[in-house]
Length: 224
Image (cartoon, rainbow, N blue to C red):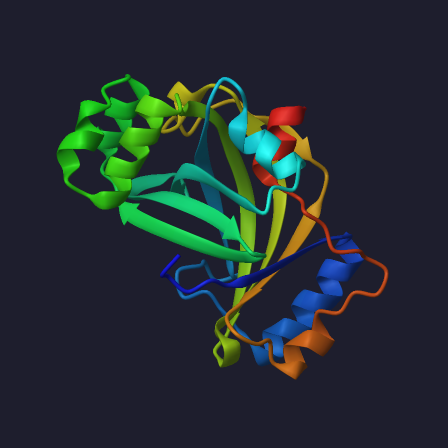
């Protein structure tokens, strides 16, 4: 891959861990500039998979190279939507994204894949190809609350994800009243960075009682 990969670590933490860590982070890191005053926002993602559950199996088997596609928007506001492809190779994470319109998303949900082909956008063309040849289809919606901190050295991004919920009603993607069910009773700490992690961050986010995890919000949503 030509794009720059990022390191990504995940830990399952409890509420006490979260309170301690977030209170310390507020003194040395900044909230994400797009977040609300408390540093949080709501994410809704629609994940694609095929009928053989390719993305689920690749994750559970620990495949060294894997990928998944999703449509994502924030705070129930469909005025800004992104198509994203997240890949993992050689223990590094890669992400490509492209803006996608509400009309294009609704076309995909209705099975009109020609909108992807006609877009002329590389990532949409890739999704079109894989929907055609790998039978990828919209499968599962995942909602959660995310609190984000950024630290410039190392391009560090630290997030706390909670209230993870899901629905298999892909057609309800843009329905703010969509009924969802709990997918995991967890707070997931994610630490992402480029070539190095500053020592101040390394020491601060070290949670001795918690082990690193391969937690996937998409996979736990599919397995409930």
